[in-house]
Length: 352
Ligand code: AMP
Ligand code: MG
Image 1: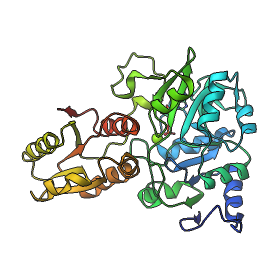
Image 2: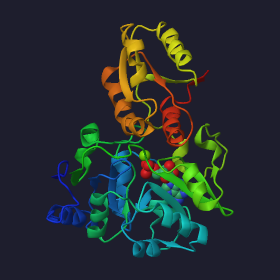
Image 3: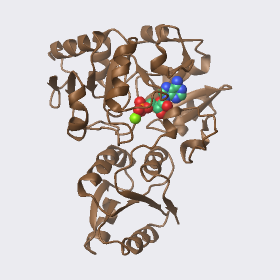
Image 4: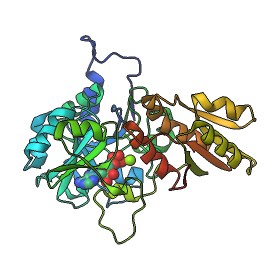
């Protein structure tokens, strides 16, 4: 297994040596698996046009075969090979949000293997802005199929040390690019009847999309469970995801002292509770000798997004009886944070 350490390298530097990335690109082209950084979370990548390479992703993750993968591209030529019938509104979204944390569901061409799309006639496509990801894809010369780098069901990987033990045995190359800039997966959008519909919230917010297209919808399943007979627009949303081993409860109130008091009251009933708390509230819990993890400042949703998956992974190391997580307002990036937290808590949500 090849390990490439890009943690302290300035990839924008003109003297930057691309040799290692060329090797990684070749590993992809020849059917291997590469763990690589993107601006959202780490990806577990393979040649997206090679069915047997893509199969290795499903095996390494233990991912259900009906959960399609996103194809990552480095330029618009790659887009035209894998997608067709792109509408004016879809072009507008592409121009506004690529490269960046935005995935568009488009009609696929026949070159895209069934295993990538789980048999659907659409394909999820994204052009990452992370320079390492972009160069890796262009050296590979093919779209890279890459889901988040984690065993299915676990929180997505946002730094190599969090995921090294669960994935390193099954990959041919690891590119360490430090901590992910955004920390949450991309916003997934499909244009339905001319209206961009958010199937998974992410860094690109509904408000930002509305500015471009005048209209936006949010799929109702972002905060609710699927019933077994429903038609699923985004298969990934129906699976257990992000959940630590311990039971987690998400608690939210607009009123901060109500929120803290509720968590203190609930924590009292357990021997070994753990609280994922905002920086401002930590001392209210530590004063009572409660165990905490700091998820970032209340008003800095970028910071909370960046910390949330690694915090959920820390939970398993501490092995508490129960975890209480402070929620944030479901607005802007808060929509994506709460979507991941509600699922981490398996819909145990108290709103007061
Ligand atoms: P991951 O790469 O693990 O972050 O998950 C990719 C997400 O994109 C999952 O929720 C998938 O269900 C969704 N997705 C990928 N391709 C499609 C598609 N063709 N149609 C709808 N959703 C998709
Ligand atoms: Mg994932």
